[in-house]
Amino acid sequence: MTIIRLVGRVNIGSVMDTALVVGATGLVGSHCLKTLLDSGIYERVVAFSRRPLGQQHPRLVETIVDFDKLDELEPFPIADVFCALGTTIAKAGSQADFLKVDFEYPRIIAERSAAAGATQFLLVSSVGADPQSSNFYLRVKAQLEKAVTGLSFECVHIFRPSFLIGKRTEFRLADALAGPAMRAVQFALVGKFRKYRPIAASTVAAAMTVAAREAKPGRHIYHYDDIVSLASRL
Image (cartoon, rainbow, N blue to C red; front, side, top):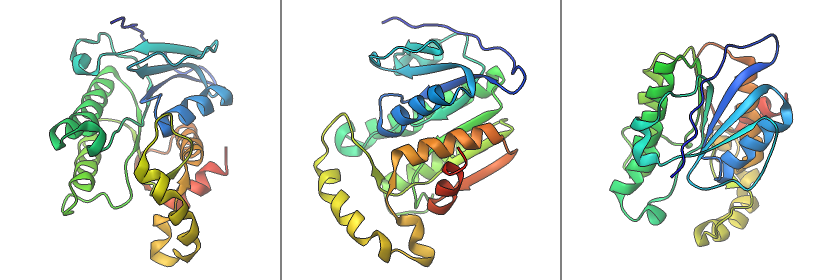
């Protein structure tokens, strides 16, 4: 498997240097990659993925990575990290394999990025993430949030969308059934339930881009209204 090794540079003027997109073939990750390339905010966009992206762009550096060998990837890019890596327990096949994809891989990437000098980490998590949740998926998401926020990044942006709307490269029966139902009831989700409204993956990607551009120091968590507000400023 070919691994491209790349070292970023410092930011120059108003154009930021390097963005690293992890999970660029997924629903949010693919939109994030497109948004970053179209926006021109970064001089270079590095995409870590398991398989070829099938696209070309003068600012895109495609990096085919064996995620089981992340510790062997040297040196790590100095970049703002957009992490949209994830799977489902059904697709992973077991809780152990789900944990590897949704926790271990992102944790290693965050640790390696922080050690390389990255200042921003933007993470796609989930609404309801809670270390005390009875739901294994939501506990894992909360554990990853805690691991990332404990690192030395100047800015950590955690996005907690609910049901994601968008065209996936793979068919998911659960999504196909849930999508219409969620759209039908979304306007009934008001007040404290607004954060459970379905949201377009492209909106999440736009919000991540704006959050990175504004680079507000500290640890930030964004739900539905926050995500929509950020995206509107792209």
